[in-house]
Image (cartoon, rainbow, N blue to C red; front, side):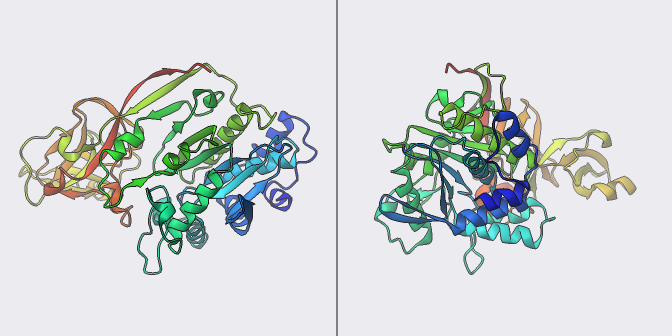
Length: 440
């Protein structure tokens, strides 16, 4: 562990005397995916003995006290490496003698985590979407494996020969012997929020000021699995030993600031729980958060649209785009209205040289938690030009995604979609935004 810290930070931490020195050593060094790969490899190579069981891909980070350990869960989805920054922070606190209780660092899905970093090492400059399949991992035939955050309710009775079930049983075994856990995720979009928390007091000094509520209920209302499943949060929340339980989305999967947010949140939580004397980076506590109340999902059919769809239509996520200057930076294709009244897709570069018609829309992926106004155009059908608009103002989470980027994950509700699929494909889970005042 000390060797790992020296490799990443070019020094060890035992001589750190105060918060200022700790910040200078840990937070002023921008973490990279190469650093997190080393951390992942170290945790995957480790194991712990707990409750009479040997649990692989978990590491005990020593603190001063003898109380039940706290746990940091990383990579429950393999392509979400930010949690490793939280584990690395706990290692640094331990080396500095600033960890008051043992912390267990856990890789939630060791197979998917290994596959993710292998894919990254093979093509580090490829877009993060190319590694999306390693959210769950792939079997030998290249098929998606089960989601480690969707676990059958009877998992304890099932055969542990199934790696998915075996890992769920191992995580449950750890859960019976810890005092609390933080589950750190990241997202395909710019999603920074607290997804669940057991006590409001655990949010004190959090650098994340958005709280998502009602997410599990909204998702379960539309669950269509043949076997009833539960999330890892649901499994642990029933255990009487779990005094603190928090889940976060720290931002876009591979951005440096996502790793910073994950580490900063971990420090704030450990300080709030009395597990370290090192003060949080965030020192502007007001008790005010933004609440994103998740509503029942919207399909494309729930959006407002005229009865002008054609059988050959394909429906794309889009934004109204009256001028070239208004084309979003993440858009590569526009929709033009031809002289005959039909609509056509045209690459932006081709349009700039030889426009096939009047510029009307830009094909564009909406970001997670992006605000959408009532009557705003959010999708368009081509060639009919049928516009889909928001029935009311919302911020959206878990939006459908471009099939060109997420071809291996049908669960995201990929677009474009055909006209006969508008009532079955999710557009997003809309959120009502309000102020949330928390009393600690």
